Structure formats: structure tokens, C-alpha cells
Image 1 (cartoon, rainbow, N blue to C red):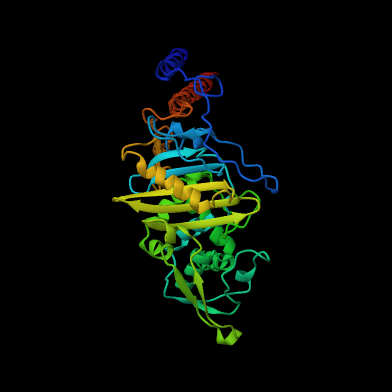
Image 2 (image 1 turned 90 degrees about the horizontal axis):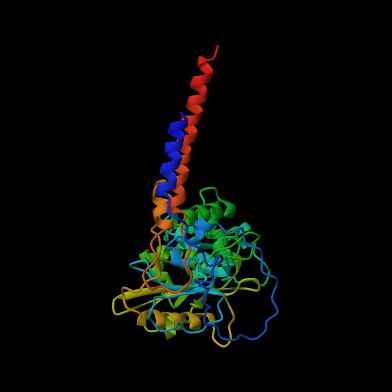
Length: 400
């Protein structure tokens, strides 16, 4: 028995490669600072404490993305300076990550969280169905973003979607979360959103409110937002809504309210050639957040921003500048990839391959070892424990 255990231990040691020093252990791979432009001093609430960092989550999409600083392909022009604390640019079709700043750093989402609501509920709801807005739907913070729905009002699901995506209506978010929950509650809708985030591979995302209004423990990352945005832009209905410039909110005679027009608040669709749409967001805590996408010469890119200030450029303008930079990069340039929906949860063996995806050659930024070899050691150790346990049990049965 002892010989068997020694053989297993020796095999594990031989198969497990020596760990490569990480950037925190050596100065060989220093963190490259992200290009930043100075922003006016702002008074803001203290940043919430994110959950403890999980090393496996920080290398989803490739080890090169495990950095608090800048990661870009070698030999390409520097990205423009922005005020965002983290950002990412990726190809919507191939899933290649073209570059980023702290792509796996935690941030608060504000209204870009409505994209997770869309990715979750669009397939569940019939846009032609007419529904009634409830008192619970209207439970939003005073002064927060609202499209103007009224309690007791009857609207089509499509109208509510347009109110959500064009005017960022928080009451529209509550209604859609409730209607698509299967439990007739916004809380049930939030649970479904978190399940969808997990399926998409957005393991750093946790929703507390359907609208993105700040809630304790609510976080996301620039990388996760790209996964969510990719799922949204794969839906033709979402693409149509995201490019809608104006929509009508119908009158409600029973509530004595008149109809009115709303406009899309995402300036990218008016001012950026090839714009596909996206979503803006803001709270005092999150600051300005943004997701935008555009196409050029058959190529579709998405940009995500967290923690930006509106000066000297607004969030959508910072996103536009990063999209311009992304379109100048060669089509094969990449520093990582966006995992596919279900890839991390499909089978137990799917996760390790995604977490330790090889780093593209020439990518700048620190290199951290993945945890793939640990899976092998753990598995072999487990075999040893089983054999040891079996041997002890066999021995006990033979004792008088």
C-alpha cells in the first residue's frame, strides 16, 4: 500500500510543472499602467468592498487578462487615455479580446446592468403581449431614472423594452424582471439574471436590483459586461431596440395621462458611423458606465467601461475613442478571448481549459500561472486518498 502511495505522489510531482513566478512575486512582469486623462476632482461616496478575489475567475479568457493594469497586443499603437477605471474592447463575432485595462477588476454597474436583464428576459417574453404595470413595479428611488409608466397602465412588452433601453426606465426594469421571473416578482427576476450571468461565464457579476440601482454586493467587471453584451447583440430583437431612435409611450385614459415620445439616450447611435447601440449608466457610487458596439468593414466590436467621469469626455465618447483604436488593430490581434455561453458550466472538464487559455504571443501586461496543473495534482491526490482509505478498511477487517 505504501508503495502505491509513493508511486502516486511521484507521478503527481513529475507531471506538475514548476509554477512560474507571478507579477506579485517578482519584478519580471510589472503592471503596465493604463493611459488615463486627468478628470476634475469629484465628491463621491466611498467605493464598496468587492468580494474576495478568486484567482480562477481572474484568468477566465486567458492568463494575460489577469492584470490590474493595461493589456494590449505587442507592437500596436497605445490606446487612448480615458477616465474609466477599467475597460475592455472585444470582437463580437470571434470573441477575441483586443485589449483592456483591469478587465477582471470589480466595479459597480449602474444601468448597464439592464443588459443582463435583457439577455435574461428577451427570450422569455412575447413583445406583442399587453400587460398591466403594478404598484410594485413603480417602487423605485425618488429622482432615479424613469420612463414615465403609470401604475395600472397597460402597455405592450415591446413598449416597456423600449422604455428600458432608450430611457433607462427603472420602473420598466422592475416590470420586466417580474413578468419574466415565473414567480411574478422582481426578486425572482433577479435570481434568473444571476443564473444567466453564471451560464454566460460572467462569474464576477452579481445582480441585486434588476435596474442597476446600487445594492449591497452588486458588482460586475469589464470582461463580464462584454460577455453579457455579446449575448444581447446576438439577439436580433435587441439589435433593433438598441438602434431605435424614438418611440411612443401611449396615453392611459383610465389614469388620465397623455401619450408622449421618448428618445434614445445613447448618443453613439447618432454620432458614430456604424454604431450598433449599447447602454449608458450612472449612479453616484458607480460613476459613469458604458457599453457600446459598432461595425466597420464587416467587423463588429464592443467596448465596456466602468467607473468613468464625464469630463473631459462623456462615457460614450470615451467608448467611441476605444472603438476607433480597436478598429485599427489587425484582425488576428488578441490578448485573450470571451468564453462561450455554457462553456464554464457544461462539464467539469470544460472550466479548466477556459480558465488557463494560453496567452497570445506578444501581449503586454503581467503573466500569471493558471491553475490547470493543480487540477491534475488534486485528482491524483484524490486517488491516493481513496486507495489509502481502502487499504485501512481492508486491514481493519483482517484484524481479530
